[in-house]
Amino acid sequence: MIGFAPAKINLGLFVTDKRPDGFHDLESVFCPIPWNDVLEVHLREEPGLLLKLSGIPIPGKPEENLLVKAYEMVHQTHEIGGVDAHLLKAIPMGAGLGGGSSDAVCMIKLLNELFELQLSEEDGMQMAERLGSDCPFFWNAQPAYVRGRGEHIQELPNNPLSGSTILIIHPNIHIATKLAFQNIVPQAPPTDWLEFTSAPINRWGQWLRNDFQSGMTHAHESLAQCVQHLEQYGASYVQMTGTGSACFGLFENESLAQMAQTQIQNDNWISFIRQM
Image (cartoon, rainbow, N blue to C red; front, side, top):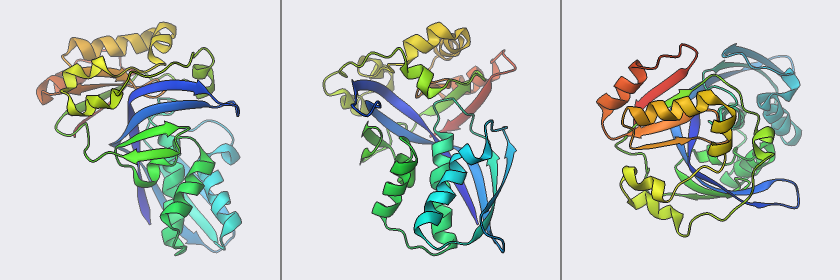
């Protein structure tokens, strides 16, 4: 059984408050991107999870992997057997693209099918919320207005990216989420900032900002270079996604996007392009 775990980008990311539990309240629009990790699962006779990883190397201890945590969480509440799993990692980590969260939710959904658990929408969302802040979005992976820690999700009637070409550039640096939040100062978003969804892409800058972008581009020169490259080649809207380090440009002209990708000079940068 195979599942595809998509990346996401943030259209605007506003840090609005510091919570008593130490986390922050956010407001954003999440949009899924067809840049996928691939997860394959099969039944195994022995109990437990045997996880194989390929593609982009994943640092850290195996027990800290969100895929392992997702399996263990389901195993604690449902009678499931052993599983062989293979993750082909393609989405860069520490990039603000949500790949790890997406992988974990993909695991829950595959276990649901493999063992016929018949999880309800509410069950799945609650499990996803326990795993991490971005995880609930990936249960349905539809363009959505997201608030709080990521648990309040209001799906949008239309995809704001529809008709544009997206070019994502990752400068091959990892930004830890905890570090990104250290110097952030919560502030209110613009009034009615969701009006951007009905405006032309080249006017989105009137409403949108990423509260992490200024600090991260000052700290990492390569991030600033990514932004400059996308602007130089005519992107109608450019922003860093999440807490970084991937940046995206939305192009109304596909050939300009392709030229921008072709003209990337830094061999260490990773790029992804797709017409939405």
